[in-house]
Length: 351
Image: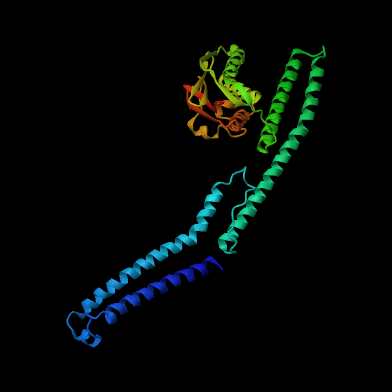
């Protein structure tokens, strides 16, 4: 039975019940009440119309309340499947496309809509799966020719007859091949992570040791630019997770703080314990990030206007977000143009 048919029958039943109640009250008032005069005398008496209006109000008000209450109950009952379908659809994301929304089994329009929605999400899941498989296969196929090209250029570079200009050109081509290889590796990592194919270690990790190591590596990267690296605070903090991946997050954020800085600028690392959370902040001077770009910082391949002149693949922050999220943490970036940019990572402390 369709929703329209059900609404018609239900509301007709409510109106019929209201009519029965109205008639019963009116009959009781005029024929059952001993104090009420006979109908023939009533018509002749003065004030009969006012008495009739009063009786109609007395009987009509309960009937109207029943009609309103019944209509409200009817609409709530009829729209309850819509609310349930909406709540279930809001929980659907790219990681739960295989989850089927519950069906009522009544065969009405909403049940049919749920079926169509489930079919749509299933098609989307298949499309996403094909995209992942294509990306993995393409990344795998690209690694071999890139390795061969790099090996050939390195062999040519060892020839003694090359001029200085030729050597410089070959070194530039090798750098571009390395950049392509990093992009391929990043795509492979993100695709495998999206498909749940990467297993992370679950072991105690001394986050304060990683911060000190990242500061040391940052000093090496910052030395040619005259950038000063410092640790403002480094509380002892142990988290559970994959040490290699967490180190990758710190190195990536520190590298960004150095690259998107200014000559003679500063990079400050701070690790604080905040209740049951370890809070890591990496702040750097520099041009900063425009406010309209903050929402897109973690998108793959997104690079701001100031980033196009700086070497990079545009996947670093996306990888950082995946690693932090996989460790049940959060990552945020706040920036004031021409002042300070701060990347904040929060991770739960190990018990």
